[in-house]
Image (cartoon, rainbow, N blue to C red; front, side, top):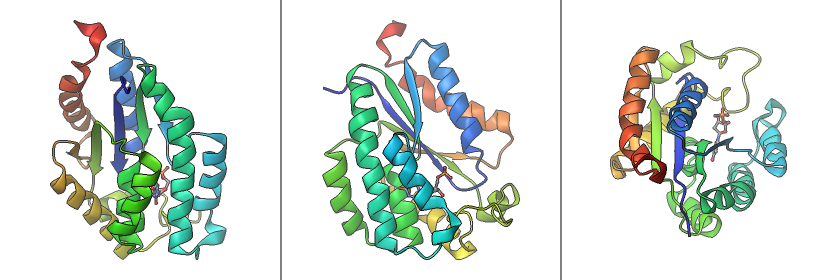
Length: 214
Ligand code: TMP
């Protein structure tokens, strides 16, 4: 039986995701919640090896289905070796990207049907779903201005064109509209302190479910 909470954080390039992830984990730890912070693709040795293949620029032309399958192969390891055991032991898991990223990037960005992604979701997640997803939303041009996307260090996803990035953002927002209770959109173009206030307000009721508090 699952006892910890699964919190996922999603966002486009330049949304300040890394900083805000640290903030979320700090809030939880300050309330005494045991937390594991991890990421996708990655989070295990195999997952990190697959991440390197997935993001390196040398394979810019990888087939979209190869990309999708590698994302889910990495996710399989991550779910079985890290996420489920942690949740089972009562530890909360905060993940830098998860299932919604596959619908946004491989679905919206690459044009793979949601039905096909859904088959893999059922297979790999077996009904596991995030309890809360924080979507750090920022307009593509604003995000771009904050990132390395246009320079030589950009990874395979950062190097994609504006059309791809807009499709990714639209897919994330579509998913948030379909599941507003789980996916909470935060305006990441606001100043850092305002973003953190919004995140904190979203986290409060969730943290209230931690049995150690009452
Ligand atoms: P990061 O830049 O947030 O660390 O994530 C690495 C890239 O992986 C990011 O550009 C989005 C991409 N990605 C997908 O395309 N599909 C997925 O399912 C996941 C988890 C990430």
